[in-house]
Image (cartoon, protein in one colour):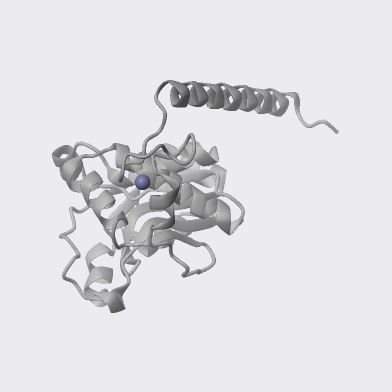
Length: 237
Ligand SMILES: [Zn+2]
């Protein structure tokens, strides 16, 4: 009736960690109050370095497809925050964007995945950049939603060329077979959780996210959602 004793222990453990995390976040926000990363005004909430005015000015995305969450359009000021994160290593932007992605997920009200899987970078690119922006976003979104992330669950087999100037068909071809599940342990974990979300920073045609979704479904994962902070609206390009 009350479930297995080990699951009660796990739940208590989870509760204890959640309370400790909330408390430490509250303390940090009191000592270092959040400031808007765009204008310097006080932040709108403990979790967000963005003021209510700049928050309202974001290019929020209305586009809605079941199983897919996109928080905003790739337009000012979101595009600059993403570029600064990716190419200039401004990592605090990952927190702002990750929290905004988490808020978009909460607004949809759909069942939450049990694990976040960031789109992997090729090892060579990771060494060059020093961090994976998708993993940083998944980390903060996951922290906000209470979902763990698995930055090494997938690997990129080929360092695919930049897709910026490619057509939709070229993009699909470019990423086909470019990823793999990163070993037997990662596969077991993915199958155990059953419901995951693949996380990326920017989605254009969705070819990268869809390739990972297909691979995970073919590997036996029951449900694979797709989350992206921003979406390039092709008709506006
Ligand atoms: Zn502001």
